[in-house]
Amino acid sequence: MSEAVTMDKLVSLCKRRGFIFQSSEIYGGLASCWDYGPVGVEFKRNVKNAWWRSMVETRDDVVGLDCSIMMHPTVWKASGHVESFSDPLVECKVCHMRWRADQLEKQACPSCGGELTAPRNFNLMFKTFMGAVEDDAAVVFLRPETAQGIFVNFENVVTTSRKRLPLGIAQIGKSFRNEITPGNFTFRTREFEQMEMEFFVKPGTDEEWFRYWADERYKWYTSLGMRPENLRMREHAKDELAHYAKACVDVEYLFPIGWSELEGIANRTDFDLRQHSKFSGKDLSYFDTQTNERFLPYVIEPSAGADRSALAFLADAYTEEEVEGAVRTVLKLHPALAPVKVAVLPLSKNERLSPMAREVNDKLRHSFATEYDDTQSIGRRYRRQDEIGTPFCVTIDFESLEDNQVTIRDRDSLAQIRLPVENLVDTLKTKLAGEAFGTDSLWAGARA
Ligand code: ATP
Figure 1 (cartoon, rainbow, N blue to C red):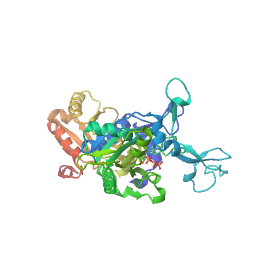
Figure 2: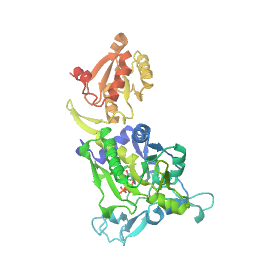
Figure 3: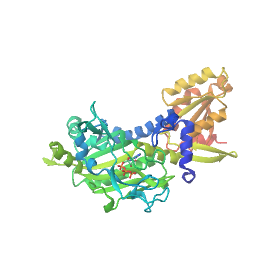
């Protein structure tokens, strides 16, 4: 259960099973930077694919985009980031640790109790130099959000996609913020991936669309198995709103560190298109050929973090339960997110078993992400698959050689059934697509 999950347990499982490693570990690590290992890369990709599928592929009113990370420096002047994308920084006069003033409860250093300096604005954008000469003219920023690439391409996309408003443009990609206090594993890092969509609408319809997207985004998390009791929507108070926003609601998750933002849904009004029209001198208004009206669209923005969502899905799935007197750690991930869908495990490394096991694996891998494993004892291999969240294990034993049947083991119920190899693909397809796999009649009947 979620109460039992600590960040330490997640970090340890992630390292042990190849989800996430500390960046540059052999050199002592680079603070707040993390690398996704062989299992983690598949898992995070599944999170991003599920988002893309729900936001782009299954809709007629959203298209995709993939912009460069470095953009014209004026973009960040127009967006307001150069002027105001900053956090209030204070420094301890004794130990010189740096803190975000707005996150401190007291006026003293949380580390040593020393006196703090007065806050000063610290801009969170990373700067670098483009080209061979390190002078001011060549300064560029690493984008702190993917959204601006969408706004500056609005006209290109509308013209080439032949779509009418309301229209959304979605993007997944890296963003960079020189956070003052990164930490809590992948929750707050300086390099992270965002999944953002800007939905352009006619002014006057914006409030309705804002509600619509807030609901949709909540449903996305629960449709992938996230427990409703660990999710909540938090509406921003008026004095909390960013200067450009008319309304904002956060999807919050009950992380091991407490309730924290997972995603923000904002009504950004026409702020961004207005600013870019002004700074670029290009009219970014939209002409509606059906009503003969010209207007600057309003924008509803659901903005989620891929790493933060992945962390929340991991925390939510993490379960420790007692099985036959021992503690079993299992990630009860939704099958769509599980890095491996089916593990193929010959009962032992015996050479008589491997040809059939290999054949079964070859057959399955056309339809699912599989993993073939014939190392260690079968118990240990089950434990590994449980810990990486594999919904099904297929075991090949000596009897299989005689009757051409194999055993499927269900991760959650631990039920096992035997079935002919020729039925394997279809059965697994049905089970993996099922909402409540492990509880229908096929499994119920097989339970001891
Ligand atoms: P916070 O208040 O936590 O700093 P924010 O309100 O500045 O976040 P947004 O600018 O709304 O965040 O970014 C949208 C999403 O991007 C966040 O909900 C989060 O999932 C993700 N995100 C933002 N900053 C980080 C970060 N430093 N590390 C990981 N994910 C991040």
